[in-house]
Image 1 (spheres, rainbow, N blue to C red):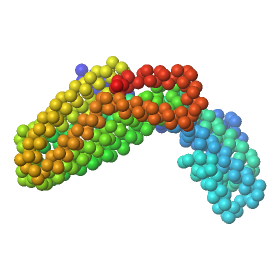
Image 2: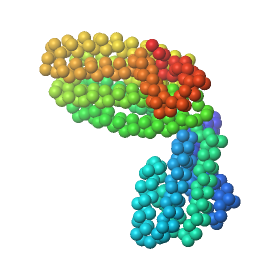
Image 3: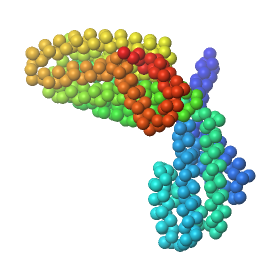
Image 4: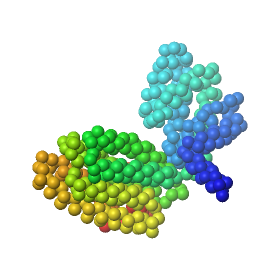
Length: 417
């Protein structure tokens, strides 16, 4: 039995390893570079055509969209550098001052042709070509090898489509929601008892550290968005991207509001020390409310990352039920806080701020608010796309892609109101 469990654990680790971005990138890049070198050996006049595997290595990325964009920029940078080198070889040749002019001219040309991060590649290509005696043969060989590497890199991802990283982005999003939940539970537990100022300040620092988690989730989400673009295996890629992006936006707002709430409780602890933050009954209600909101945050993340309509409906129903329970507890807390403010009017601003901040989180998680936000973002993205690519948009509309997108939106992140 133990051996079976160990075997299942090993298979699970192997499955995760196969989908690890670093592992996938390493294997794909190595394979593409090797294939490019073998082809270049047969077609290039150079004895060691290393430009081809180098180009394939730089072109092949984790996502198809990144591969296409990097491949085009890479080829443009090499061709631009070769042309600059040919012009300099015909006019001045290679001297110390012409090398300086060559580098300046290549970098300027790189910015003009908009090759982005490949601007240094323009200068590198120009120097390599200018530094040989047979400029013409070397220039054409370098262009040929670059094209071979770029074609192999592009073809590699077209024939062997890279994985879609939506699941990994969803796991990262849910991980952020669970960390947010744990912090809410700790804040609620401490609010129900005696909370020293130092302890409340520690929770405030924890809330601030969640900003780093948001940055990591944003990076995972950008990778998922790139993997959806131009991927033939994915339908409604725009909807996937908008659902995940708006979901992260909501969690980010909840994180910011929780940080403000932690700051309010820290100020309240400082003002009331050594007394408790709240009266016993009020503190218990605060703990209950934050616990219910914490559960709703996790349910929201599950809703955002659920792509099957039946599961999305169940997740939405669970979230709606949790929000209704939290709203009832919030109303009870409002009465208790008003009574406390009437008994002790020195801290009424802080007590009112607590209620305002929990209201803001509940409003952000509301399913109707979520649906409106999703539809507004879809409208905005569609309008931007229509403005940037009018012909492609008209073609998509003729093929019925846009209508299908709007029909399917109810299965991604909530029903429209």
